[in-house]
Amino acid sequence: MKKILFLVTQSVWGGAQRYVFDLASHFASRGWDVTVAAGEDPEGELFARLQDTGVHAVYLSRLKRPLSPLNDVAAIAEIYQLCRSIRPQIVHLNSSKSGFLGALAARFARVPKIIYTVHGLVLKEPLAPIIKLIYWLAEWFAGKLRDVTICVSEDDHRAAIRAHIAKPQNIVTIPIGIKEISFLTRDEARLHLSKKFPPLNAAATWIGTIAGLYATKGLDTLLESAKTIIQKNPEFHFLIIGEGPERNKLEQFIAANHLQKNCHLLGHIPDAAVYLKAFDCFALPSLKEGLPYTILEALAAHIPIVATRVGGIPEVMEENAMYRLIDPKDSFALTEVILSVLSATSTVRESPPKPIPTLQTMIAATERVYLN
Image 1 (cartoon, helix red, strand yellow):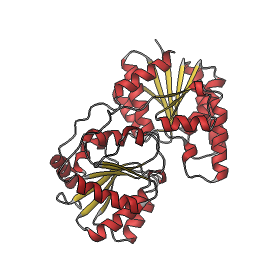
Image 2 (cartoon, one colour):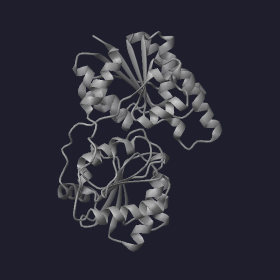
Image 3 (cartoon, helix red, strand yellow):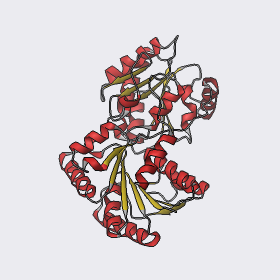
Image 4 (cartoon, helix red, strand yellow):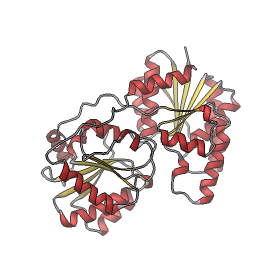
């Protein structure tokens, strides 16, 4: 029986947490001895979901997302003690912070195999030069301690090699995958959301996204586009499902531009993907991505998509009249392409030209890395 420790910086629900949950719950169901450790919030959704599956979870009180020398040193000690206590054969690290601190702690604890998954390389973020240098040094040093680096897209794979954060022979690409989703119909989804959020007009044109409220998601660009579109088309509504630190900034923009009747921050909605068919168009104007689950889910829902040409998105979304790619930070292009997609797909809907990566394929490829 294999013993594995998954480590992720935050317990709030997001792409990295979903990835950890999918792998942890699967291997636990196979009889592996699985522990998941995370920081930030002891009441985070990751912990709640793990509890429902019976997977052992540990809260790391000193593991925080912001840079903090005192907390970071204490977090290394915390992770080291956990590794010495449960003695895993494999430690699987996720997110940049835990990827660095966890690599140090696991190597000190003499864990036989240390694996790190890149969920969108942090070096691609729009950071100040000194901060980017600090992150690069951390990634470069930690890369020498880790045995395998998993990238969820070929774009990240190439970027990791260029940045010298791991040896090319120690990097593999394993795209994230999804299982089949029981989508609500368009009418069911709209009825449910409009009842839950009364300002929504179920008869309007809905442009929607599912994304954490982080600067890298480019939601300010989406609202800039919304402002332009709503001025000419007041029947349009923009829906953002998700929560995060940018909420106040986005709310201020909505209020300053008198968009409250048409732009809606719906907050976190569990299993939000089931509502995707409610959207006339899905928009994801990210500045940086690895490979977002929401794009795969929107493709599976067969709804029009406008997304930025970043990370692994072009690898899974081939362009046609219904699926379009644009450059980041271009609200003009986003506006034009949203209107173009709606016009082009008003009478015809196309299936995704490329196969959508599956959860089963992701798990099988990851297991080969564990056992190799």
